[in-house]
Image 1 (cartoon, helix red, strand yellow):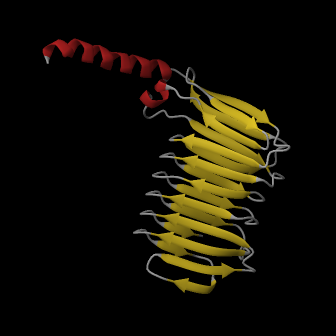
Image 2 (image 1 turned 30 degrees about the horizontal axis):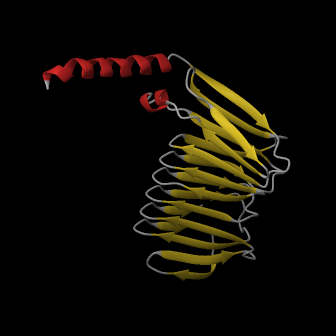
Image 3 (image 1 turned 180 degrees about the vertical axis):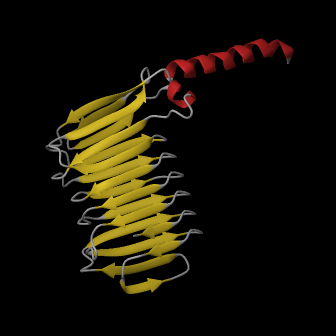
Amino acid sequence: MKRYAPAVILWILGVFLLSACSSAGEEEQLQRVTLEKVEELEIDHGSTTLFVETADVEVLEVSLLQSGNSAGAVVDQDGHRMKIRLDNDITRMLNIGRMPQLHVRIPQDYAGKVIVDGSSGKVTGTGLQNHSLQVKGRSGNISLAFTRLNNDVEVSATSGNVNIQLDEETPDATWMLQSGSGRRSIAVPIQDRNESNRKTEGRTGDGEHKVKLKTSSGNISIQ
């Protein structure tokens, strides 16, 4: 056991030095990409915190707030499909407490589909409208604020909470909230309400758009 001690000590020292170097400063990389011809936009944020926004911009804007020598965000396009992902980087795993943040701003006139896929990273969406949205997560909380709910929305999480905020009093949506052991709360009046032990269903307005929210142990709230 003693012969391994120096190697272990050197490894620990290397981790601290690498972490210290990586936290020396932070910078933000900004990429601007047109969404013309893009029908599906996928954002794979892994365990990184994600902020996604529908904004008054002409092109897609992707920025990563990170330590200066970490890898950055990568934007790939294959035909009508575009994917945003993060480069693998060991310094990101070691830099606990100073994790990067991914910011994505989507043009208001984009009417395609947005898919968000992550693991333990928190997802926050603001000003959302026009495009259909699918969010898949595991332990990170998911908070989505809609200016207008005028397309389909599907959210699934394992232990993370799901919170939906609406600017509209009566969006045209058909709702399905399903949770295993988590709580469900709805602050908007729902017609044709059907309640069971693990599921709440109903309709607001004309019920035109389908909204499916599902968690295993997280809570679901609509405000």
